[in-house]
Image (cartoon, rainbow, N blue to C red; front, side, top):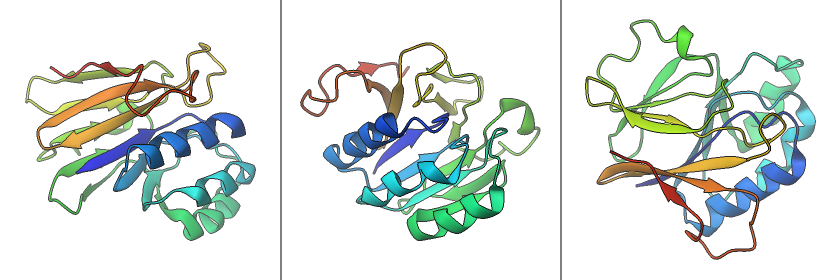
Length: 177
């Protein structure tokens, strides 16, 4: 199963559109969002997704009621952290801030998080794949990225949003271990 992952949009509408295009071009079957849309203005570009979206709130959402209502058209948004099973059975935990996890990662195969705006893909000591897709907005470091997770075999790669005119997969960096 192919799952798109993004976080930390901070209302950068152009990069949200680029992220949606990357997910659609890569035939993602689901998209996971790790928080910080920020406002309701960030929701309309997500309507172009060709697959369901599940995600969590971040620490910068101002109008949570409005965002929750708008997201109900696109997918499901919950308080972090939460876990779910992807349609293929992969156990995924989603949070915005790593510090919120506590003991909720038990039994998961993948942990998706954001908040730091720094992309990273690695395995922890228990063999779980940890995916921080970096910042979709690109406001902090100027390097907007998203991630694509493959559940069979379990691996992820980062995709830069700076050059969306490339063909799918071009310019991707694989960081799986």
